[in-house]
Image 1 (spheres, rainbow, N blue to C red):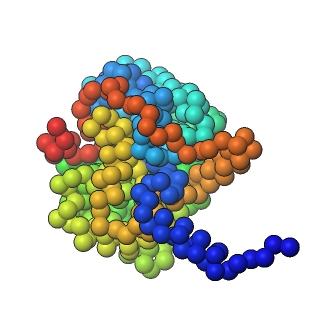
Image 2: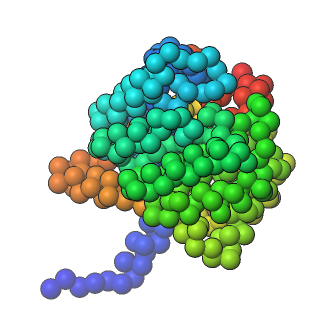
Length: 371
Ligand SMILES: [Zn+2]
């Protein structure tokens, strides 16, 4: 009969706990990146990655280099319908091609990458494309909307009506929504508490059954813009009063830790994160361009004055829409005796040599800060 020596068990637990304190943060948990992108060569030309784009092989190598186990890949198909850029002939065909290309790319790494469809919600083909994506097993998990890129202004009743229909369609297709809700920065579209209230009162009720992940903590990169905080405060108050519309709302922290764009607001930022609560927050790196490698983005995020427990909780959070994927992966790995953890040390240099992920960030300042 085995005899349990409780002292040695206790000692063992103490040693494990001590090791946990010493190990680097990202070696302890399965880190999930909830805000990644791939770019076909055609989409790359229209945005920061350039004509080589970013493919799944490259991204997975980058994730390996950062110790990130999985990533949610948000299609950038909407970039073909950016109203502030030159119009693209056969626009909808390009949008479909980009969503299809993203679908095929994530399918190469089903354990590591999960695809989201995307579309400009103001376009007449938006509902058609959402229905088409809902039939694609690699894209049907969710829908990415980018209000800045698509120049959505929720103060405009026509825009609001269109976006409401899109939220309703996503809900009907059981597709979660990741939304960059900050209005266009370059054109100084209105954004702040008023727009956040419209979002809370008129958009969230259209998608009550799916997760709505508000990107970049409701901002557009960094956390130094008072209007972003005013918008986020609307959601914080709603969480505090247990507003049922906030039931399935999550926030990603993608892009908030850009050096020089949060330090002055450090106390406020930490307060907001704690008010929201770690269970509603997920990590994101944003596009793996040469000046925003996941490894570096993760390091920047970890420079915020949060506790190790808070980082661990946020980095390894399992949002409802990835639950089945994560548990299926773990079952598969167990069956095949495989390790799901990323391969460390893979060389990822030299693939992209272009500028910055300006599709989300305050591009001018980002460029100034990131040579
Ligand atoms: Zn992004």
